[in-house]
Image (tube, rainbow, N blue to C red; front, side):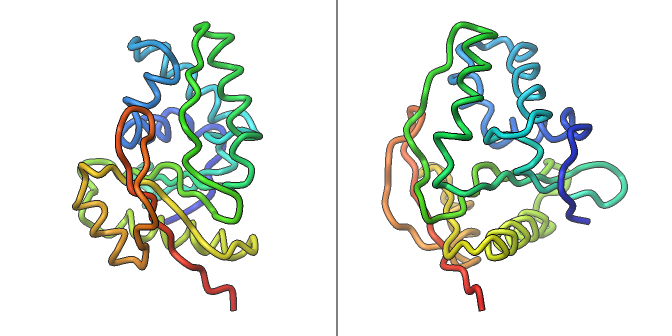
Length: 187
């Protein structure tokens, strides 16, 4: 049910990604034209070596289509993974607004998590987080981190039930976010 993404998953994965970060995608793309934003992010998803690449994505697929996704990567590689994103956006739109650093070295960063509306509340998000944390443990990472909007206490409670703890609050892309951390047992 949970599998690594492939480049061919771009259309479904990007629609889910936008559930998690459509406003941020618009801001960094410098346009509200969702056809352009979709084109940009589908291209990035299909390409290796960037933060929104299929390489960093796990999908929940129960056989009737992709209904959940999670993007995660080594936070120490943020600048390396973000550069091709900003370069491509600048080439496409002339924009490429660089948001604040949302992660750091030493953590596996869960960049985006989304479940299709008709499948929410079924534990899919939790399964995706568990799979991403297991991937992080397999890569030798000792903690996983994520951001949650201070305006989304329900999501924060979910993450806290899964063992994440608020480490600090920070501005990001025009909003206020809690940065949560979960220690990973690599034993």
